[in-house]
Length: 160
Image (cartoon, rainbow, N blue to C red):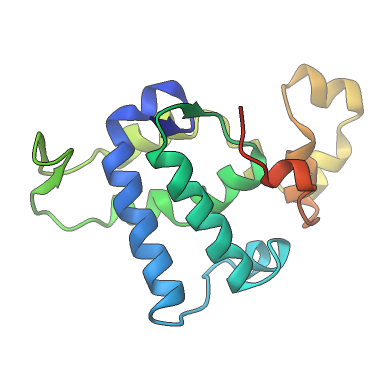
């Protein structure tokens, strides 16, 4: 059904389109992933490509998936900007059922990424003690992203 928050089903087609564009840019045009820090975290451009294909599959699946900090950071690094810079033309989603002139990028960002702790600098994240992180609802992935650590294998598995 969708990835991210449950309300994101309305954006499924747009997310699919942007994921396809980013995958094509990396794999067909052989461009580098723009966020080099995230590319290193995922093991280079090939690792980013694998994760983007995985996200595309999850987005197309029948069930809903809540993503962890690593995948949210990866999506956030290009998804919001791409939506914001989309041309002013009619976009067609859902086999023609939906026609969209323009997606409100601020509304998109707020609903798709209601929690952007993964964007906090490591100085801020590392200043919190474990109890504070727990109270703020930060998962271990937020610490990992902030400190540019490779994702734990459980972070790369299909979320439930």
